[in-house]
Image (cartoon, rainbow, N blue to C red; front, side):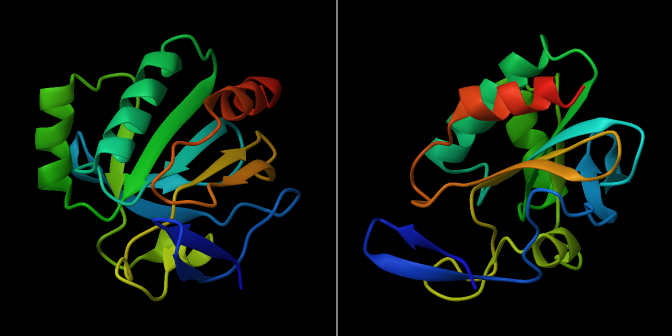
Length: 171
């Protein structure tokens, strides 16, 4: 099983089915915060998705990451950007309103943790057990994973340029 660190010294194991580049992206349902409590599908064929898993929107790094992808999404032609956390949709909606998030979908995996388990990003142990690691996937139009970035230290931001280039290349 893959691992990430928290504050560089606590190793957290990732649970679920590990998905890698070339694998078919599992079709999974998460809960959107706008429109509130509507199902949103991750995976499947026919569109390019940049899927950003974050631990919680209420942390500085997740806040900065989600704001950055929201700003960048405006120039990503043909790419659906979805940020997923375990935050309740009501809390996510409040955060989105305060942060001015309007170019991406912000969703929750709180119901069944299907996304976290199906994509292998659920933290199984440590102080953050039960939430997601910081991981980015690009799902191509053919429904296959074309890019994956697991941020090794959960308190650090991802490589935005690499992820955005991968999303653009998948179009």
